Structures are given as structure tokens and as C-alpha cells.
Amino acid sequence: MTKSLKIYSGRNRPDLAPVYRLFEELTDTTTEVEQVYHWDVESRVVEERSDAQADILLTNSQLALQLIQDAYVFESYKAPVAREYAEWLRAPDYAWLSFTAWPRVAMINRRVLGDDSSQWPSRLEDFARPELKGQLGCASMIEATTIAQFAAIRIARGDAYAEDLLARLPQMCTSSIWKETP
Image 1: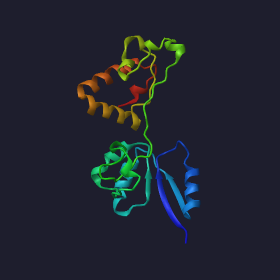
Image 2: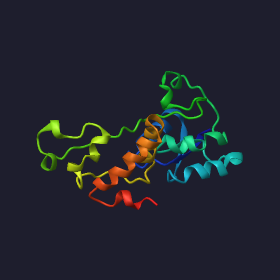
Image 3: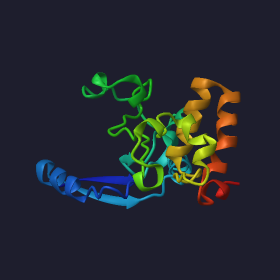
Image 4: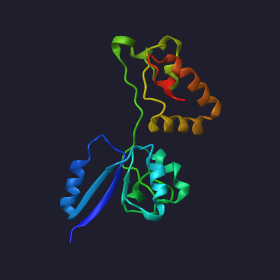
């Protein structure tokens, strides 16, 4: 008899369909994937806690999982692979496991900043330098990865530091992406 696996997925890149097809071939298990926007996933799985509709949740950020950790929606499972992961890539009780780490990166446009790499920003704080005003673009402040980055900065460096950085960075942007945040 063929088994089935229902997956809620907030991931739209990369397309994981080839992985699902390979899983089906190797395990004789059919997969049904339902796209769930990563900002909606927390409320959805909490609402379904007593009658879970999906077997697996793949989401775009750890933030969504951390936000519902206290709701005890997920069962702990200390998978052999999870025991090898660094603590920041899993829940303390192994209720979730990250299989990707989304680094934050900066890209330098040499036509804008020139070829002298000694003048390029090398730390996040450097992007708030006055001479870079109007030359910065970034992900929207409503993106979970951006929120998580600044939450981590706040925890690591304190409220005053994070608030000061957040106050200075939007002034440097060429677009209104920072101003979209309520």
C-alpha cells in the first residue's frame, strides 16, 4: 500500500519538486504539497494543533517556528542527523530542525562605490556612513529574515545599539522599502 505525506511549504525558492519526486520513488510514499505563506503558517499550525492536517512543515525562517515554540505544536524528535547540528540550527528540544541557514550578504556595485575595496563597507554599521547615503538597498523590513537579523542584533548588542542602527539605516536607502513598515 502506498503511504502519503502532506507537506505545508512556505518555500518557493528553490523549487523542491525534484526532491519530493525522489522521495516518492525511494520510499513508495506520495507527497502532497500545499503552499502556505510563511507569515500565515504560525496561526495555521496552532489552529490545527488538535487535528493536524500536515505531516511536515517547511518554512522560510526559523522565526516562524520560534514564535510558536511555547504552543508546543511540534513533537520533539532527536533525529540522528539533528544531534550533529549546532544549537542555533534546531530547537532546544529538537521540535524543529533547520536544514538551511540563510546568511545575510552585501553586494558591492563597483560602478557606484569604485574599485578601492578599502572604502567599501565591511560591517553592517558601515552602511550608515554619511558618504553612502542613497546608495543602499535591502530586503523589506517585513521579511522574516530581516526581522530575525535585527532581533538577533538586539539580543547580541542591546536595545540602544539596535534602535540607533535602525534609525540611521533607512536614511541611507535609495528606495522606500524601509518606509513600508508600519
